Image (cartoon, rainbow, N blue to C red; front, side, top):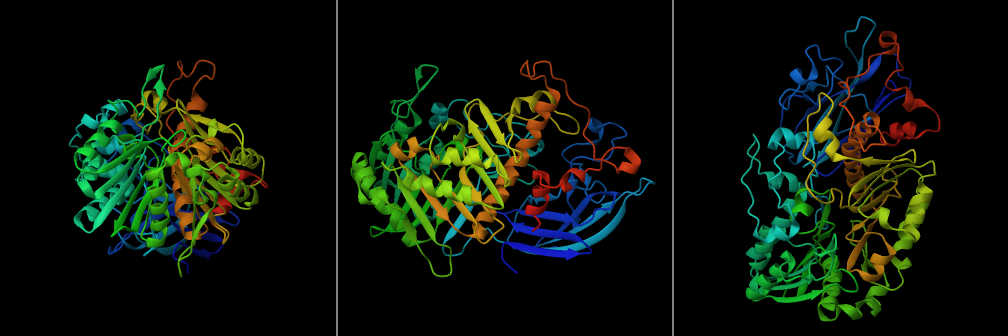
Length: 586
């Protein structure tokens, strides 16, 4: 049994568990589904618990008094009574703990009398740990749930948790807001990334023998800024000073009043050494490095900016390497950037991938930009996409803005290949979903804010700015050839040539599975919003005349409803729906 996937099969029914980061994805398959199959119930026994409890579904077969009257955040439907009509489901524990999670999955039937009947049952367990690889790597994700039913239920759609404008972040005061379990809104939204970031800084500050190197792009979250400034003379920082404008008005990090300029001034006042640079366009890294006696020990990196939006609103990922060898590469990169960033891309260090092998752990490969030959970093991405035989998942913030180069060409080919793929792409003003069938959907968060169908409620759109900021690609997560590309790089030729960035490649199924589960979670979270927008809004009037659709219900068997069974589309040969069913259960 692996430590990231467990499978059981009985009487043609398969249940497979996949380890995500503090969550579990369940994949189901049925060899020959009975006509009265109406879905799957899921019960879970948490570590240390003595009983199974049912997971809950937000929708049911009917709402006699109307969904608006029967459904709220405290009263959802038990999946034993309202089964999930999907061949996969992600269980996101409210309060994740280390240990073994036992899942009891059951086929649920509805004979012609309309009463539910339990079918084949399987009990499968999987070990969950907060740390991904002891002694090497811990992966963390933000929750990305500010625009969600969960945020509405637990925090009342409160929009005052972040500053309206990023430039106001330096003076912004966090509000005191907790849910019924006493969880702070910021730690809840920041999730694993919040724990990794503040845990990293707290541990390093307490050890007087450590120094801290920082590379920051967006830097406006005052609690992070103050935590960095507390290192005083033990701190060196490289802070972006790129120029930018919004609607013709200067709004760059280089402005004296920007949060980044004010943070840099605060660091200097505390006794730190600070350099401002944008390489040849942007200093786009988000990196912490600790050193002891000048020798790098540990590094934090990834796509998460040290900002309110980056940590609390956007979908982002973060990695902490507990490896002196990995930290040493980042340390060498920092030293060269701190000394002379404009000459960096012509150094030998910039012209190669750096490979770090750790006995008993996955090999890590890193490429640092900028570099003149952008195919150096982008060709491996193209190769991974083109060579994938099972699945490709990706969440790449600015993919829509790439017009040429190895990556966009590979993604365009992918849309026409019989390989299962999910993708989310964000650019200012438009959030796109790249669907398995090759089509593209546009997500409008404001639609659910105005016209949520029952039993769903209105949601906060998440404020001004982007909602997806990840930069990762996963290929063939369910095969031994699995690969993950991640880091701060936008996968673009222009970025690789001009920006200070890092791109990480890990060929390992456990890490790939963690990212794949996250990709599915993000996609499903957004796909529903796209379906509501496109199904019920006029396409020629930007949804201005759209009305809320009828309440969403579970489907009954054909013998009762006279309509196709919910599962029929998943069994049509050579379709992406069939691949959706099989890739998560194989």
